[in-house]
Amino acid sequence: MRLDIISIFPEYFAPLDVSLIGKARERGTLDVRVHQLRDWAHDVHKTVDDTPYGGGPGMVMKPEVWGDAIDTVIGTATPNGAAPAPGSGTAPAPSFGPDFGASTGASAGPSTTATAGAAAGPSTGASAGPSTTAPAGAATGPSTGVGATASAGAGTAADAATAVTPTRVTPTRAVPRMIVPTPSGRPFTQELAQELAGEPWLLFACGRYEGIDSRVMEDYSTRLRVDEVSLGDYVLAGGEVAVLVMVEAIGRLLPGVLGNAQSAVDDSFAPGSMRNLVEGPVYTKPPVWRGHEVPPVLLSGHHGKVARWRRDEALRRTVRNRPELASELEPETLDKHDRKLLEELSFRVGRKDVAN
Image (cartoon, rainbow, N blue to C red; front, side, top):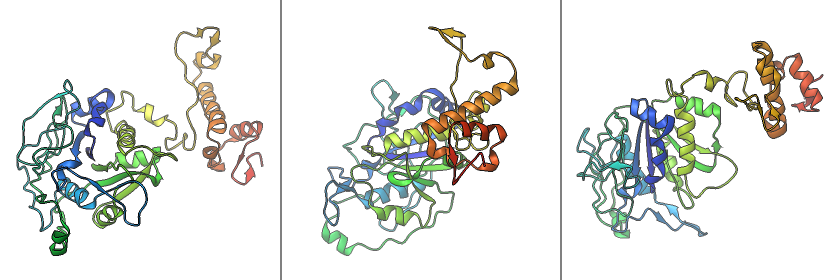
């Protein structure tokens, strides 16, 4: 699987080089490429935002910068910019700190701040963003085959008045599914993580400030599958943390990433028996710690009783901590024992008591 991430803070993604995701990258299971958005800015200050139309607080991320960045990453171009040449040049990849990776050297184009094996990007010269070096052990993957974008000049009003309306170039190869983290998006769930894990290529657009100009999502939704996704009912400073969460949730579901594939099957929210349930408590050795004993059934060796206990505890914990999930349980998925337990917990599923 290939993942492209566009952000003004590439250094946020250093954790993707450690643990299970880092090992998946080393093996080539996961090809992660991080791109510095400011490399596509049109002015010397590398500006990526402007004041919102209609007034109000905060700043909105500029559509033309995002458009140039996304077009380059997915290998499309407009008449106002040079068409990408597959395999042109070598881009430096992102720096996550002085000891994190080694520089691959300067490139002839703006850096796509990518992992090893990434393709070249458009040239911008000096950048206000972090330096671009590659994390060690990054996975290699298909070249993005990008060239330079049209970024000369500061985009004055006169320029805008005489600009030629771009004619979209239809990609002649595969395109990614685009994910935009935003509090106003659809909920990111285990079910969605499973769905995204089946995609060959994902592109994450990390917004900041008041978000990305909505025309960016409108425009790309005509050519790509675009999903606006939310982690929950709260607001973060930017999309980077949300993307870290999503990449780990998706990446661990890829074949061979987890040491034991059954671990994903038994996860909270996993499709099947754990749908709309959270996982119950877990225990390891010693059997007694500070006077707290492991439930005897887990030491019994009786697989049927252990499975029943785990199911019961999942139901108990879901009712206690996530009643809104428990209310989504389908009555036909509940056996007689489930129904009796939920009756004891005085919990109603849907509009009628499950005991009925």
